[in-house]
Image (cartoon, rainbow, N blue to C red; front, side, top):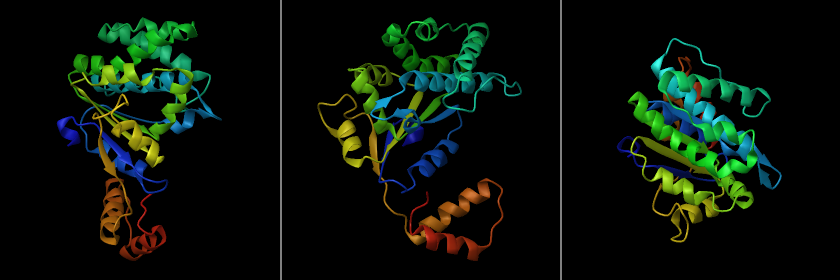
Length: 245
């Protein structure tokens, strides 16, 4: 389904293994892929949208550039929120102009004038599709714990409408989201009055059977080149009780 371009929402309670499923799914894709957790930008009852935008944009740009020049090391901060983050983004934007003749000026200007948020967000949302066309490779974007974006919408009303308007016409980008606030996420994607109604295919995640969990963990360890004993794996499954997180 994902390989056909259908965007998916993975829904389940905490520690059920949503992040593991997202990361496993991303590994199955061949094009550039981005993973970001919205939970890292929560500040009390608000959301640090500026840092989220900067980190998300940096990941998208660096993934595209890495596909063009796989042997070149591009500047990318490993911290989701730091003073170096904006400098990293500016460096990547500058390289983007030279390499692909792409100049998302609204993103750059936004960090000098926060009142230009609307213009910047539209360019941020359009960036994966634009770069996918430039490099000739489809993007896959995963946003973990995406229900926290609702906090951003409280501070920036109407945020989700332009997001849906942009995403629904992107033919070279597939989106994966997850959420542990089961009721809230089901409402966000399943209610007719919500912007994302009908956009995501919902996958309700429940505890794995013993056999499924053994296969899931075994495959993950083999992919990472880790050797293990069957007995140790079975003991881990006993401790996890069907939850791969």
